[in-house]
Image (tube, rainbow, N blue to C red; front, top):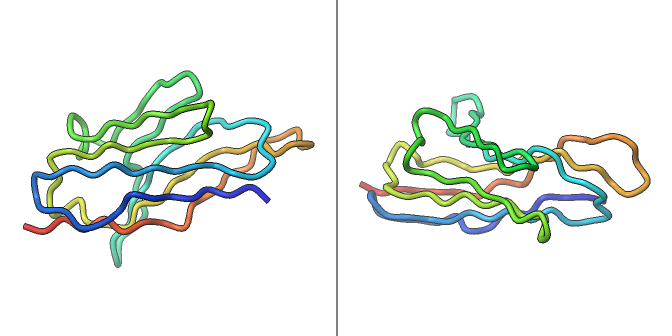
Length: 121
């Protein structure tokens, strides 16, 4: 069974930095687009950043120039480096990726379990 496991969330003061990691595991034959989304209570989940297999990136306007997404294809891992954090960045952050399992001819979208990021003012 393929899965995504996030790590790196926590509590940080405004202006600080955190690095999130998300590792894909299981019998994985390929990984397509990977990304990070976030969600706060009562709001829809929103895209934070995404990265293609060739490392083309896309960011939400609210995080441009503060967050950096990257991936290590050899480790099946995507990272989100968050800097200059603001209280409004507080949310549960979810990893998302298109995974192709061994023996399958198509990609399926997977979500991680989420990791809490809290930015205090």
